[in-house]
Image (cartoon, rainbow, N blue to C red; front, side, top):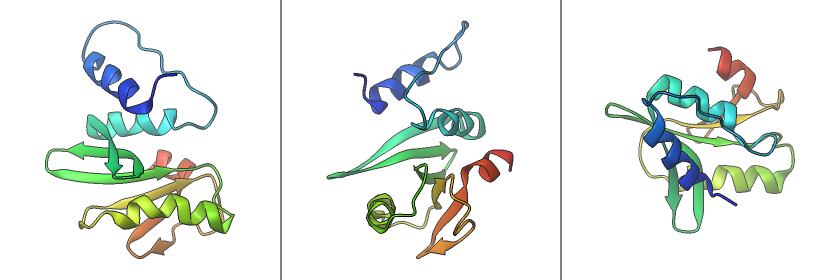
Length: 123
């Protein structure tokens, strides 16, 4: 198994090189989000907070955006687990939870935006 950080480091190293790159992974693991963040920002990292992990940290010049990606967040336990890493970040950079849910779309939770991932991809 290849961990997301290692995979992302390999992709970043090959970004401006000739050749075809293939991004694989299990269904709904964030491949589309990763590609879109790379297209929009150029640099994407994984955020590590002691025991928790932020799925994607997009860096563009001096701007940083933090993203959690999860298919469906209707269950209260899942909701708390997915928001926790973003809530632990003590800065003023944008934080977004991307889901396939239509319920609660465009909501804001203590400064954390919740967006439908399809709408976000089409922005």
